[in-house]
Length: 197
Ligand SMILES: [Zn+2]
Image (cartoon, rainbow, N blue to C red; front, side, top):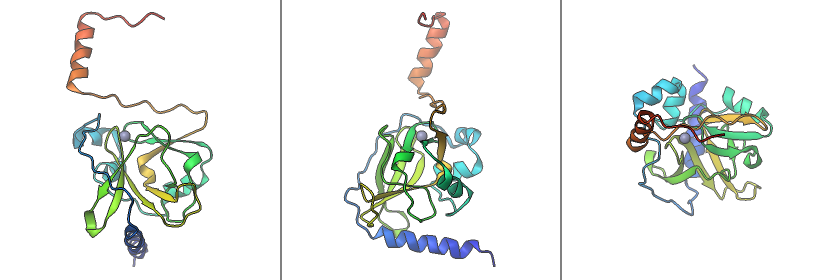
């Protein structure tokens, strides 16, 4: 018998239990994120596991290797593994014991979007990256954690890229809209010069 099944069942039970906590706000959004790519394009820049979680709204196994690393990480910033947007910092990190990276708030960069998720017969609030719509996890509140917000951003570690304090932030994936591409082509044609230094 593989040990993974009881773990998954425990996870499901945990989620159901906490899904009953009524979220105060379940904002809906239909706004398109700035970065839109095809599944094929995402597959080119993500690993299979990253793709499954962030683009197919999967959930990583709790208490995995990434979680172990997360627990040991010191000061730093957590960025979106898909587009490089700042999502969380170590200041909002806390130990919840749920087996996934936990934060009590999003970073000041405000790139974490919350929206209602009624899938799997549960009422939950999903968290996604505002820039690229990557699925990050869910947020639960009113669980009694002794944090400033009593909210638990339950995040898949694989959706995050950690950069220790003082390290270089990942490059932000560019907004590749048709308009931007057209403009770039025009500038290249005209032999546009970069602003003088
Ligand atoms: Zn993103």
